[in-house]
Length: 277
Length: 277
Image 1 (cartoon, rainbow over the protein chains, first blue to last red):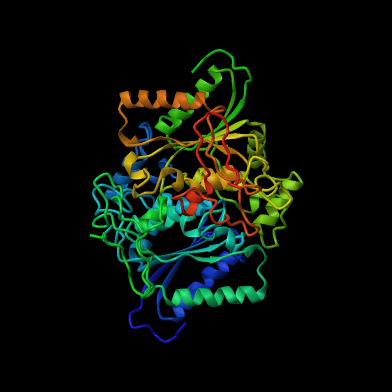
Image 2 (cartoon, chains in turn yellow, red):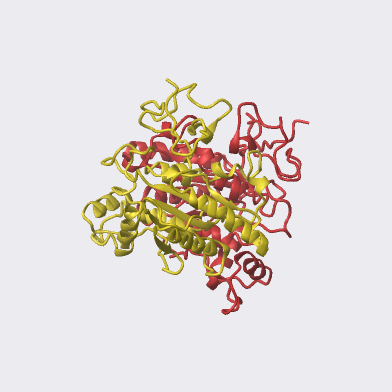
């Protein structure tokens, strides 16, 4: 990575979730912080295990919620967000996301998803009124509430790469990560890049660690210039009022979750799908 | 549901995860317990919020792990499982899963997945040596370690059904739930049924609640007789040694995660995919 100051320094939030400070996950998170700072960017790190992040959404998240009333999570979340009455840990993380130009999540793949503590960061931070809600701009697209931010998943996996390839039994990595890439990032307006993955990570030799760092360094250098995954926008991307993709809009040969990715460009820079007519 | 004793009483583990005891999620879990008991089955319930279930995997899960050694989760998990030295809460849940003929997970869809507390139940209970691991039978199929069990997801969603339909923007429900249906259940040998879903669940009228209960009652009556999702078996389902599906094996028109489901049968009873030749 070029260590001279970039033309426009950016702000990056790194979130990491592994119980072992010396793990590959945390080593990659530290590497990312170091590389991005060396390139002149500002970096903040939320190390969820070190912070002893509380994972479960409960009534304590909403200090004004009456103890004797049933907890309706969506409405309690909406009210607390609107009134600035969320718990302090959640408010602090929301401030970091708002501050950021890019969010990078580092985690080991456990049961085809994030560790619970990171799911708890998502559940608790992306409240109604912050990450979603009827009062916010249309979801799924750059115009959504957190638009203008880049987003990257940096994942370590015990499995072999072939098993997460296009015909691999676990499913293609990008489809297994659909709930995060499309459901969290793109839904809230962030522009997700292709995930960065280190496979066969349980037994990484020093040589392979160096290779992984080098590959990751290249991805970090492209954090603001690589083309994001060209997911379709709900507003103008070819959907009907019931939020279904209009027949014939999808790329040939795609089905299911894969239908919501438009043509992949080859140039760097944002490539977003627009309806075919 | 028929309230006479069934020919063969079964054992069912219900796991539920909602912070509000009066929530729709917990109402459906209670309804399921009541219906299944009325039909003569044995039921145990793990109410994760009521149990104050610890969500995050950490060193405390492995009491024998030396405090001064780095925590390698997979190997610590494998050793503690083999030696019967897991923490008591995890051991108790493993015993319930082993005891069961069927597992039903009840949860609200939060960010296209389970609440963090339920992800923590999965992360902590399905240890190496219990849910996965090289010393166990081949994963992905009825012969895998937890084979012989039925599995059902019972999900409440705020969104409209159309948005989770085959062309819906969130992705088809079964593909959004792929990490659980295929990645947890089928991977460990359990036979997943089609998920049971209640959409537009934030504002459920009493009439719609009764409809949902009636529909759920029918699904519960078929818990051991309905055909499961016909996922392909790794052993004998048409995969190469790199765990990739052989070209031409998939159903026409399927791609990505959808490729790993075989032809859907119409008869009740198990229908599993075998290679086309």
